[in-house]
Image (cartoon, rainbow, N blue to C red; front, side):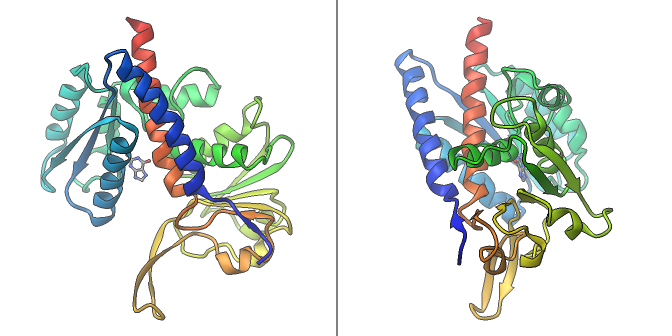
Length: 295
Ligand code: GUN
């Protein structure tokens, strides 16, 4: 084991302490900050994520409101709930846990959330603002979490070759947008590889910063990594471990192999995962500040 571990849990705890302090200041002004978490159905992984988000809110003093809709509900039912939350001044952030059941038109749901309360940063307006680099505004939670992990680990992406594996709307695309901004803490040369890229390893071997977000367990092998690279593993995959005799979480990176080659690496769990929620709480806090500016 050569690589140093980036402790995402410790960094997220630090950010949450900073958030809690600002939430407490708002409370001293008589203000409460509210996040609505909408869960459609009972997908086990989504239930865990929602529970973690609700618990994290309580830890920093944000008031959470969980709304659970039945598995068989229609898009119109979700849109009605969102309409109510959009109009509710006690709610500063709204998120609908993804993925919803297949009958739900997720694009319509995302469009319905007021961009002013879109703390996931999924809406057209907010995605566009991130791409343009407009400030202030919401930032996409997982990619922002990665940027904070790098910043707080003293890794400056400027001038480095960052290679992102995966082009999802939640991670790959917004990750590229944040890393290539002409701004302090960014300014990387960015390559995005994906399922349509022949010979992915040709690109990953040139990465100074390698970000894996494809949802394939242990996809990145040691020989795909440049010696001394910084490796960020966004994957959360549930796999059966025959030694344990039960399921466990693994990332998109073969940790045992990668940690012999990389200089810095995030573990799974305890790397990027806690950061996503920390940044969601940050966006919710920002939403409160933006709403105050508008008054
Ligand atoms: N599912 C996986 N990641 C996310 C996320 O960041 N936000 C929401 N709403 N759903 C998700």
